[in-house]
Length: 251
Image (cartoon, rainbow, N blue to C red; front, top):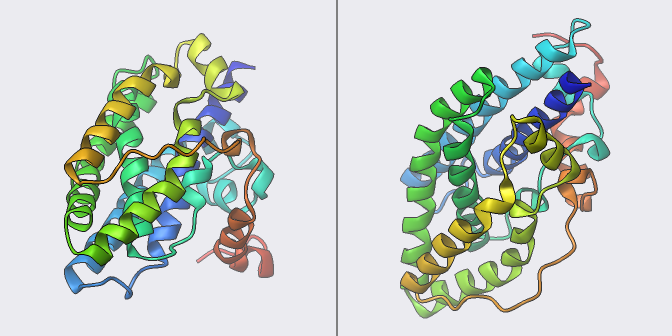
């Protein structure tokens, strides 16, 4: 029973990185500058590296000759536990940066906790990933400030993006059933305890970027429980295409 809980908990960690990594991969060749294009692609690769570490561990727990590819390609949207925020589309560069920043703050705080996890495997993955997550947060923070304190056009766009995306952030620090049970079992993060440092960091950075703190009510979001927007189905349709057309294919 505990192995099954641990397996599902690892999926909650890996799914966020996988879906956001895929969103960023869609931008390859479409960045506003060559440097930014390469940076976003590298962040995507970092996230997929983190995903592989989680899914390799999950596959070992699953047994039955499971592989990391099976976990990524053989599940439907109801079996994914990523938060709603990371599946939001690449509407424009402001939305990309807004989504990245709002997730990066939580991602970094969560990894800070996970690197001290009682589960040695999770702790090792977190210690490796936090080095990359620190860069991701610096990148998205710098761009948020540049857009917020830039031209009237850039300010308007990033303000709109933050207002639209901020409504999904409550899910980040609201524990799902899996997260709550994992915390009780001793190997999960108390995500509710991350609420205060998360909001402090987000609000302080928004002020520095001259962006008003959104007042919009949080939306009902249960992505971490398997209930998603249609956006995830579009992502999986593309991501899992080859495995659907050629089942069990190998390179």
